[in-house]
Image (cartoon, rainbow, N blue to C red):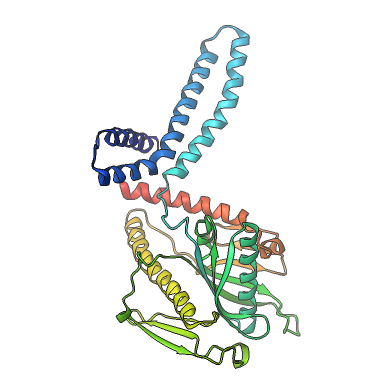
Length: 357
């Protein structure tokens, strides 16, 4: 790790020199400064690490060579203070070395769909929507409902919403996958425990500039929006369904009052899905390269289980179980997300180390 840190420190100092010598080439200056800014935090932390390391080595040297008992005790006290500081700085450096996900600062489009389990799966999808809404509220993020298909008893076949706020994607990106619930449904008279599922997709909001969609690539259909049970919400044709012809992706929006607003929302969701497809291709290529060098075990499809009888939540990706189901469903997700973040950052760092060899 330290070799990589030293190399990036040197790169940072080289960029500072280049910036002073670039002259009137403003485009080149902007390019240099962009790379320099990306390395600035790591360079500052590395400098702090070196200073702490040198102080620790001096204290250790004093402890082993000093004859005066009082001086040795002072050295011991300094060592006891500096060793945890150095360990913390090393952990921070490892985090900074993890390849940056350029989507981390973006808003999020989340899609929750009922899976196996009929009405119970739809009710579970609604529970997940409420859980993420509570989490967003706790972090003072904004929830914007984009599209919903409810079943009339408080459940959702599908619900799509945007989460707006600083760092939303960086925290919620680990929620993608199959969520499983084990509980006795309210409609179950014999008290049997049922297992149902819902899927969660987490997409980063994408600008038009990043994903351009030519009009010739889409077909737009308009129709009257309707509520649960087919009840008309609008007499005019304001609902919009967009089909992306090259991929066959279909997005429908009907929750806004105007056809234009629904089309803009549908296009926003479509751009995010297309961007995610390209990102998935890139990740798969990197993963195949990594597997060819280090091997990999298969992952279970389900990522998390919510077990009501035992009051527990288990995240299967990291093998962590917490016995506070009620709090988790009220949006208390930080403990799980922190552990997931640490796990995948470590995995990413290891992958980048393998690929750079």
